[in-house]
Length: 333
Image (cartoon, rainbow, N blue to C red; front, top):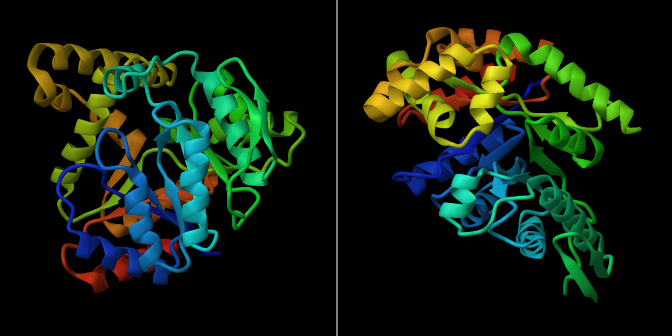
């Protein structure tokens, strides 16, 4: 059975749009399950998704993630419903809370209460997609005029994937979502973590496979292993040391507290370079893979054995479109 691979689109730095379109077309033809666009504080996700929708025909298109603070639930429904129409029903709504640093100091919106806002956002989003008049009495949103979208959405429900990591938010994901995007779970702990999640889905009265699980971490196929490891170490250090407390706490729960403290101390003393150099090889190897295609296939098999359904991959192939296509086909299986 072919693996369900996902590829991502960079949200920062320079973008070669011609190359982006070419890679998206190749991935679409190769049978990649979905193409995911991150947002954070770089480019907006929806403009890039419009471009991808125009130049692909089969792959699903997703946000990874858009936060639920900087746009209202109704605005999110407008974005996704419009893109679902344009892409002929290929959208996935990937939602997350981000963190207080981004929400309060980039968007200027108060962060808390995160879980309440996520619950109300998903409920309002689903109501609007279903065409139900919008009368909603929540703790955050009170909506009483019965609005509906002024066009007929292609689908009555767009799949909702939620990035969640603490217990209550994971339980909420198990109850209502179509997909779970776990964060920073070491490979050695992935099988029990997914098993616990499946149990939560069953406890919510749903089939345990009603919620797809997107593998955390990364699989990066590259000939320049040192550079690839340095890039991912930098990202890992940034999240552990600079992106609030959530990610550091997550890694600590999985037994990497000493490694997280070392990263924080190095970053505080010497900045990003020192923090990146302090990332322990064991931690980097547990969170992701960087190397050749054969090792990537092994890593994919380990993620499948742990219960993951979707598998993010990154492929360095330079300008060689054929090499990119061949690698994808090998990974898909």
